[in-house]
Image 1 (tube, rainbow, N blue to C red):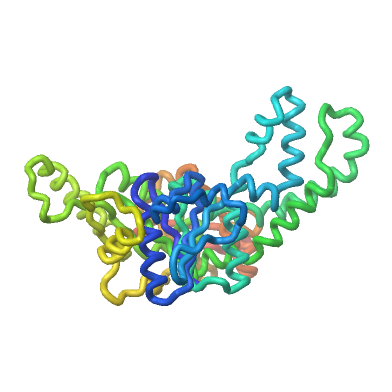
Image 2: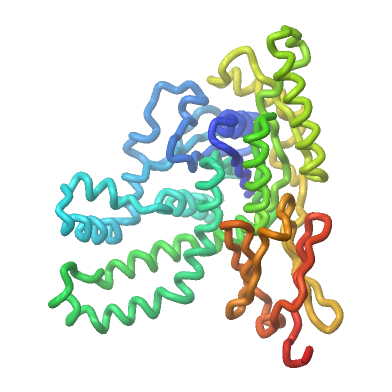
Length: 399
């Protein structure tokens, strides 16, 4: 199975490009699912369907053509399916503050629930071998980062906190519930978390395998959008995903010669030059600004023709280079991370247990170390040619 993630700043055209890619793949004979991970779903609109996928009674993907399905995650439905114990406890806590039950139900939708629900669907479809390609229409950049980081975050919680927290609360619950203003979560609450974690098992390897998953960053030829695209590239690299294509959407066509657009054309040309320079050797594609809104099957096919060459396979593996790798050298080891657009002043790193923690601005990445490196410490780091190299050595031997 192949998985293609379309991500970028809100409003750049991710949904249309994801849908057009799905149309192209289905016409080539692939069983294709286009799935929205964006809370502001727009897939039904992209296909110009007069249906409410979000309010549908069934959670099954909706067929929109031969070998083509679309799916939008309904968080309320997913809470009833997967999050019942967790949601019920949060609601009970919120109700003690005096707010109404309706307000409590709304506030009980915790950050990450929708992303984890989408992850569970991806893992389910992978296990069922139901589709050949899953095209993910991701949320804007910040939410996309939460989506791809969820498996690692949950894995860390399960390994370091979950068992201790569950055992501790089991011991103190009878006494604490007598004096606490609210009841502590029951063991069924933790059992629910355990079941959810099991449903996500293996999805982190799926995301970080360039043979399976590729990220397609969507941007517009505008300076503000470009800066966010650069940050997104760094963040995906930190989380171990491979960006194999950058798509510049809504480029003014050459036939637009009206003087009104002269300054726009000049500005776009400058930004396009920057994009090609910044992202090299990652391939950069351009799609034109159409004279009409891209909605419906026919116009999605037109967009696909502009995006892909005749006979080209959108699911082909364009780039496999991993954003980080390990190597042995000079009596120690080194870790190489791709950090395009990062500067020395915003990078921080430290060792914690068997992990190397790298920080770029406010983003933190935990890199699990191989057994041979787990006891070593970072002794030197350098940023050259967009690559951060961290040297790891046994401090005792070094001394």
